[in-house]
Image 1 (spheres, rainbow, N blue to C red):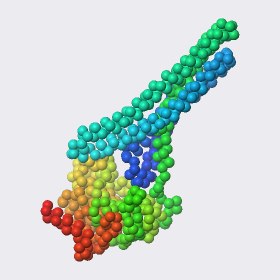
Image 2 (image 1 turned 45 degrees about the horizontal axis):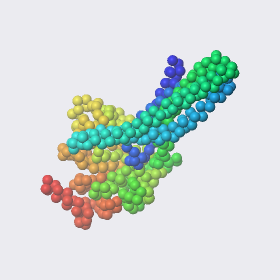
Image 3 (image 1 turned 60 degrees about the vertical axis):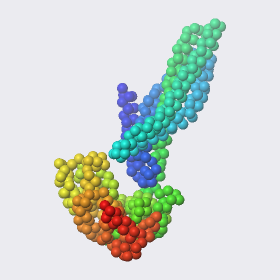
Image 4 (image 1 turned 90 degrees about the horizontal axis):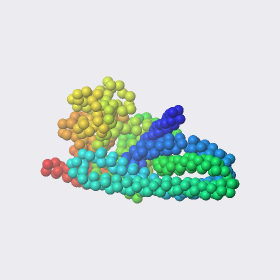
Length: 503
C-alpha cells in the first residue's frame, strides 16, 4: 500500500510539473512556432505524451527495483545449488538481450509513428470542432467524416504494427525461457542418471529457474512500455528544447518616455524564406498622429501590427518605439504600450468583466468606467447578469458587435499611448458602428492611432493614409490628396463607392 501510494504520488507530481513546464514553454514561444504546429499536436504533448511517460514511470520503475532484486537473489541461490546448471541456464540470457535490442530498434520507430499519427488525429479533431459552424453551413459533414476515417485508419495501421511486433516479442521471450528450462532438464536429467546431481537439487533448481525467468519476462514487457515512453519523451523534450526566438534582452534598454512615436526604417520581413511580405518599408508616425493603412487582401497591412507588437522579428531594418529599437526593449514593456483591437475578437470563457480586465488589475468600478467610454455598457446592460454575465469559449453566445465593443473596452483598460484598430469595424452592424464611431474620436485623442482599414469611408479624417501594394508603400497622403493623385487609392475608393451604389 505504502509503495503504491508513494509511486502514484510521485508520478502525479511528475505529470503536474511536466504539464506546467510544457504550458509555460508554449507561452514563451513565438508566433512562427504556432504557425507551424497545429493546436491539436501541441495539446497531445501536454496530455497523451505526458501520460505515456507517467505510465512508464509508475509501471516500469515500480517493478524494476523489485525484479532486479529477485533476479539477483534467485541467481545466487541457483549458483549455490549448481554452478554448471546455472551456466547452462544463464546461457539463454544473451538471446533474450539480443531479441530485446532488436525489438527496441523496431519498436521505437513504430511508437514514433503512433505518436505522430495521434497528434495528427487530435489536430484534425480540434480544427473540426473549431470550425463546426462553417462545416454545417457548407454541408461538409460527410466529407469530414471521410477525411477523419482516413486519418483514423492511418493511426490504426500504426497501432496494428505495434500489435504485430508485441505479438512476436512476448512469445519469443517465453520460447527462449522454455529452451533454457529444456536444457536444464536435459543436462540435469543426465546428471541425475550419472549421479552427478541429486534429484532434489534438480527439482529445486528447476523451481528456481521458473521463478528466475518470470521477473526477466516482466522486465522485457516493461521495456516495451519504456519504448512508448521514450517516443513520447523525445517529443516532449523536443518541445522543451525549442529555442525561444523572441524574448526580452538580458539587459533591456531603459524604457523611453511613453510618447507613442513609431518609426519603420527599411523593414524587410518574410514569413517563409524567399517569400517577402514587406519590402523596404519606411514610415514614421508622430506622437498623437492618426494614420491608416489600406490595400488589397494579403498586401501586408496586418503584418505591420504584428511587427510593432514584436510577434515576429524582422529580417532586415529597424522598428523604433519612441526612438528605441523594439528588440532592445523588455517585451512586457513594449506590449503594455499597445492597445490592439482585432477584426476577429477572441474572448475567454469566464465573465464579462474578466474579459475586459484581463491582467490589468482594474477594480469593478474602473471596468465600468472603461466600458462606458466605448459605450459597451449599453449592451452589457442588456445582459441578465450585467458584468457578471457568463461568456462561453470564444464568446460564441455574443454577437459580433457585442464582442467588438468588449474588445474596445479591453484595449482601453490598458490606457495605452498607442491604439491599433485592425479592421475593427468590418463586421459591425450600422447601429453598433455608430456607437463605436462616436467613441473613436474620444479614444484616439492624445493617442498615436493606427487603423487598418477595409472600408475607406471610415478613415477620411485620419492625418495620413499609407497605401500598401505587394508589400511596398506605393502612396501616402491625406484622403483628399490621394484622391487627387488618381492612383491606387483613388481606384480602391471608386470601386468601393461603386459597390455601395450597386448595393
